[in-house]
Length: 194
Image (cartoon, rainbow, N blue to C red; front, side, top):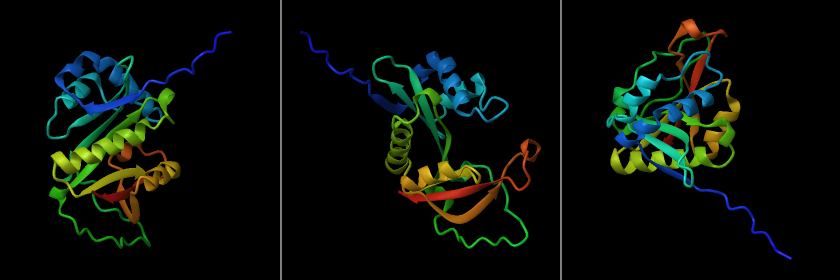
């Protein structure tokens, strides 16, 4: 009688993107665009992704399967002083109670956050965010992380809350009104001290 060993699961490796990753740009591109499946057009083109992988101002961290080296996810760190201003959110009856105590050059935004939908619920997203936060703190000297989440994605807001992000009631406009299907589409702003 032979006993079978339980199947060993591969681990996830998260690291900073490098020029070597251009060789896998097509596979990384597919992961990003599958993750942004609710967007009708590409979230990012192959050429834009190639450029982003080499960007040292807005670094990307990548998650890979340790056995197959298959790309599983991405996250980009964008210094707030280089991030576009989406303008002040205006709606009758809304007044922001948030005052910004942290200078922009100490803030970093999370962007291009994606996990292959077939690989979700394995802790890959958490590993990407934790690695990104550590990199922002240690290598970029940031003291606060900011993420914009579409207000109707309540499950995603709750997920970020579990990681320690706080929603102070701050809102920003959706940047491209031509892509808005629903009136008053905006982002909730979540913040986390580093």
